Amino acid sequence: MCGIIGYIGTRQATPILINGLRKLEYRGYDSAGVSVLDTGAGASRVVRCRGKLAALEDKLTREPAAGTVGMGHTRWATHGRPSEENSHPHKSGPISVIHNGIIENHLTLRAELVAAGAKFSSETDTEIFAHLVEHALIAGAPDLTTAVRRSIAKVRGSFAFVVMSDKEPNTIVAAKNSSPLVVGLGDGENYVASDVTAILNETRKVIFLEEGEMVTVTRTGVAITDFEGNPRTHEPKTITWSAVQAEKGGFKHYMLKEIHEQPRAVADTLVGRVNLEADDVSLDGIELDVSKIKRIIFIACGTSYHASMVGEFLVESMARIPTEVDLASEFRYRDPILGPGDLVVAVSQSGETLDTMEAIREAKRKGAQVFAISNVVESSIPRLADYAFYTHAGPEIGVASTKAFTTQLVAISLFAIHLGRRTGTLSKERARELLAELVALPNKMRDIVESGAQIQAIARRYGAANGFLFLGRGSQYPIALEGALKLKEISYIHAEGYAAGEMKHGPIALIDEHLPVVVLVPRGPSYEKTVSNLAEVRARQGKVIAIASRGDNEIGGHSDDVIVVPDTALELQPILTVLPLQMLSYYVADFKGTDIDQPRNLAKSVTVE
Ligand code: AGP
Image (cartoon, rainbow, N blue to C red; front, side, top):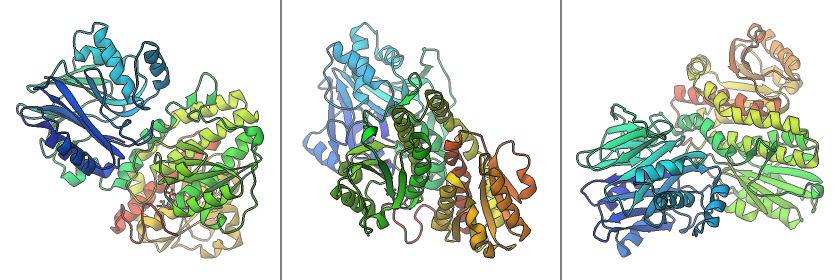
């Protein structure tokens, strides 16, 4: 997610912008830039560069930007690789724009603007908005606010826009739809930002814009309206958070913040890829020739490996292409039998995991094609692959992966639907049902992540246990493994994920009154069998925590605790059932007081063997 700050006042803007952007560095970014309206020159100067803020500051010493109105941006690439041309602000004529979010209909708008003679200098969706606002002014919009309003009416997707015009040096206009935007109130000066962290040193008096609102900011005041121009009033709030708390959006840890970001991250990963009219999926222009794909092999590590295990179910059920999954660290040493008919799918949040990179090199040496799924644009793994498809989870700061995992499951679901529609094994009707369920996921995820109190109580009840067992069948088995990994990683309690059907082949010896057993038992073909596993646990005094479907009135009789999740398509259930496990692990670790965001011995990206 990009970082945004805007300032209008009587002081030099540049230092305020740079200091604000520095407070947003924790979010992760690959380029940065500022636009400062030099009232002397009567025009804004845009200074941008790839890399870190230090590089931008260095460039500003050579290309100083003087003026008391300006805006700054740190970019996390989603559309268009990290580069100076793609960094923000984008300018068209007198208009400068910075943007956080994804313009879903960017290709259509770009085509219309090009047909109208617009010249583009970047690959981004953001630049489109600068052209739209310029064209609105040329077409007669009386002022910047009206031009922005008319431009917003043409845009679909998530956005936080901040816009300046050389022709209106006393105004900044901003607009919010799904991406956060806050207005900071000063004395003779005002601010806009993507979150309060950027402006907390300047003011604690803020207004959080709501969905569908825009604001015209001057030195002496702010005017808020909806997108139709109807005035909106908000009482300013005073932020009491410390700077550190503000970085976490008021959450205690980044991991909890990122657990709560998952509905938005999933929605962003779907944007521009779900074609409800054609009951199909676009993989950002990638067209795989399924007639040439004889086998698919997922390779990954850790949490990404668990996502890949779910992927095996998804691809085989939807596309009926033989599919395997392998740990990257095993794959690269087992001299795999591979050839041109194999498509290796490498899944990696960081895009920098060495085991996965070396496995890709082995696959390419043996003639296979490689399809990368990653969360970091232009990271090493996508660059090494033949195809790159991105999750849009935004930077994941917590070492324990949460939003990256659920967006990987969404990306793999899109991949499987795309394949299934082309192998002809996924009907139009079934694809339509799955796509509708995918689009409905963010709200269902929000229901779960906002029910933390019950899970917190369960965590407190079992937090002193010396070990946990997680059980699941079918595509819930990888979720059992993921739940165990989450708990191990951040609470340091030993935990084991097991195929529920395997319990009687050994782990049942572990069961006693001291062992909490988390059982994934949503509605589906494995329900009855899993309930019998659950009964076997209870018969040996094991404590059962069931993750079940909302409305299941039977499961309570077999469990000590039940956490329910909304119904969804069988194929998509793992995206919901993993959420309570993430939260259970979080609250157990919080109860134990471990370093949740930076657990001992762990690194966010394992770039060593
Ligand atoms: C996830 O919680 C872990 N931090 C770890 O297992 C991680 O998934 C693994 O190292 C793979 O990382 P990648 O997705 O960046 O390749």
